[in-house]
Length: 122
Image (cartoon, rainbow, N blue to C red; front, side, top):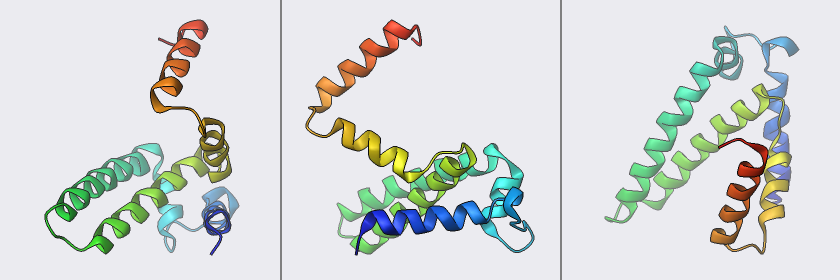
């Protein structure tokens, strides 16, 4: 299974469900979330992130690993809805991850902070 292909196919489905592309909020969960606006899908991302954290904690205490996978899938899905709303794609995230590849986490974080200072985003 090519993970990139799965993400791109899901992104295409999400794109097709946008109300602007004919997605019907009465029959499509994605269209309904997008129709309600950012507050709706951003709230879902927060809920799914919390559920993912709890599933990971439960896994540390003997819970089923598939529960964490399910919650992570829900989180990724809702994040992809947000990407679509903001006219971004999984490819944008994959490119950023690729850019970071080989950088140490602390090094990468220091680089981002320096770039933010230079651009005045602090």
